[in-house]
Length: 585
Image (cartoon, rainbow, N blue to C red):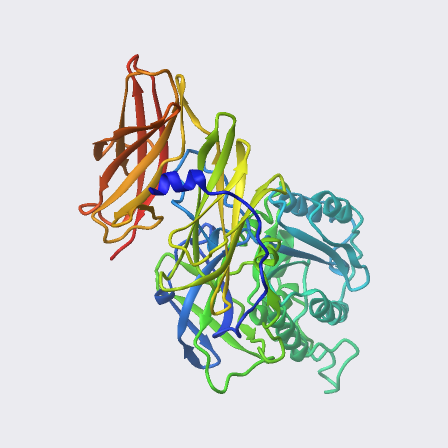
């Protein structure tokens, strides 16, 4: 039986899934961001392209996975779609915590905050959650929510409480109040499960100072370095990526200061930028300007937080857990900038066991990045009857030697589950399923557990429907390889000399004359570099299968557009398209 007929015949039906205990993680997990110069995330960093140090030790990176926190922006022009979905395509959503240093802003400066929040809210996705707080006295204004309108209304309630005649001691006192309220806030509201983007709005902070140098005794507003260090440890444990938003006039006023870095006239420095620079140094924060006009202040934050990398490190015998330690990541590729917290707190697996029972339905219902088990998934439209469609589901593991124990899939449309399938025998190769669906846009979400208890979740965005060519309609183009048992579906190619391309042609009157061919191109609108005629085989009164071999041997590794083109006798033409990926051998 060919792969194409198998997809059309597979029935979708739930079967009971037993829980499988996940084994203890094989290594500690650390995260960081890899960015281009314009702030867009790097999509294809490899494990051998990074160096990671914890303390003074260079660590061995066992694996590296990209986590997609927000969907990429729509391209200006149509582009080649990925050949399949992977674990890296799962959109996990982001956590934004917006904190206003209320005492640093004077009354009348509120439009700066509102404009910045408006720019961020406009770039949020339905997956993102945001929180708004005013410290040290206002507390949480808006709890964590996916409703951007609530955040807009919340920032309207925040008012500046700064003083116009602020002295150096006043600056130190309010900085200490802010830091003393920020540390417990981060401890309470941080998340060790996923990174948090923490945005601090401030119009100036004091650097550490004695405040009473003449008497050599602590002054009322003494600000000690340990307050900054404790905050850095809290940020590390909370996996907080920090941005500091500062009005432009603060920098201009500070530039006119005649003080040295140690202050002047036996006083501590009154420069409001020095404390911000100190905060940047201990937390790895990035400073951005608060724009007086427009809403672009946080646009870069939204862009940079769209994805991040998780690296699994080979464990060491004397690993130090639950304590903040120096952390650094270096990219070996020239065009990549790494953003990582300067300190990291590793979680002890013994105190945070991962042995809870997980099942495929549990994984399908979550929105976490689950990358222990690498997966490749793809969906295909096939017609079951004249008025019914099915989505064929194909599942592959990153390692062909892995044995799957449990696999399931759901179709999601408008936030609702539109269909589901669970494999009766997850060990089958290739693993295929089918889900009934109406035409439309869907997210295909697949979850799997292997025999060792490792879990993986992968997603692909699919369009369900048939392409029309005059009186005919075309099913999805599928790619596979030929073997002793017939043609089987395959998602990734490497050393294979050819790929077998096939799609169904439905409808049309008997005797309708047509021709079909496969074209191979480098991009969607590019000229064909290979054209192969297709054989047409009628299977029944309403279905013809078009099949042909795509030569791969001479093609260098990369992505290629495979176009299945049907041309009728009157010149009417239609096509179906799929991306083929050839990996290095």
